[in-house]
Image (cartoon, rainbow, N blue to C red; front, side, top):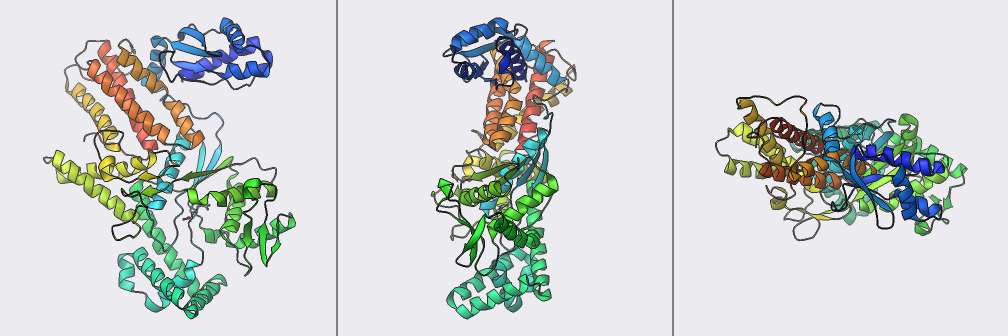
Length: 575
Ligand code: ARG
């Protein structure tokens, strides 16, 4: 917000000195070390370098033209030629007052919205969603929400794995040993049992494997009975996925599984051949990357020697379908890090295949979730943990904690608190680490009321709300709807300065696909608030300070709620 104003002033000054520098990037960003100022700009150094002039000299010429007196106490040249801006508290207060009047919440929606497709979650049919899918689901939903909040047109697409070799085995199992009662109770559990059983048999017996292969071929050729079973498996899986999405508050604009692209696969292979990109190699159709060192030793098969297409072919068909259908400016794929090579190949093939396409393609990958022993997160008996069970356990553990702390609350309310805290804790713990690192799943850590956790932030929010309940109950009722903001105490200024940066953080999350920036921002916001609240009386102070401080409380609560919402967390009025 304030940085935008300073950027405009700086741009005007730079263009007055260097008329040819129009359009050069001149970002103004918060100072990391507040002793130097509130904001900093270091774009002048690059400009000076391009022109082979002295950067400090350029900086002093720009400074002469800079008209920032209305906003800044002082602007100084530092180091090799940066500018440090010390902002006037009254300038911060003016922007806070706009926010208090509801004109913005420290960010502005994009003036020219871009269309962004976010491909995330994408579990596989007839297999349980496991903790590996949790990161894709939580991260993808958060990125979609951030982009939407910033005014972009977002299309979320769940690329479900509903086609593949697992269906041959599943069909054998379904036909020979399906337990209908078990299927009704827990469809995915029963399908998983069938898959495991037949898979083990196939490993021991080639005849069984051949039988599964034939079922698969029949399915692919459109056999009515096999298609009907396959459809039932998809419907049952989808039902269970939807239950989880409902709990997590995740929604998709489109759910187009791999099977949707079947009719397009042959055309993809033909087109790649016609373009001279795919060629025959040992009966298969293969794209080689002789000109790309990183992929030189990793050719991509787009049609196997038995004529079947594969994951890569499907992704290429998906990509072109999305371009035709939604005309996106960007497509974001959220999967685990093991798919890096796959997406490098897909993107490289696509660039050769459609050299004119401007779409930005991003593979947003993430690391694994580890158990407290540092090994992949599993149940005690070594099985993959099912997402539904994990969410149940989160709510149970949170309920225990809430019941110990507030035994007097009615059960319904305790359960509601536990739901919000438990699910919030799991999501927050997943978004907080740098997404590319593995993290250790720890119930005690994520459910703690202190530290950088969901319960701590939810508590901070509820605490602010309780101030307003008290204010309402007080003699001089509600605060002024459009109060003047007075920033005097250092804690007030620190809180205000932090609030102003909310939009910058949202933009950084969207640009770098890193929700951890927002987690850390909100944690720091809660810290600034707690220090303000300890240092500055709110309800007991006289006017106009009281209204100003109440407005700071309210703005903090609104930023917290909006930020948590972007992370996919609900809030509680009382905890
Ligand atoms: N179904 C895949 C899996 O579970 C993820 C799909 C990701 N999206 C894509 N367009 N390939 O690994």
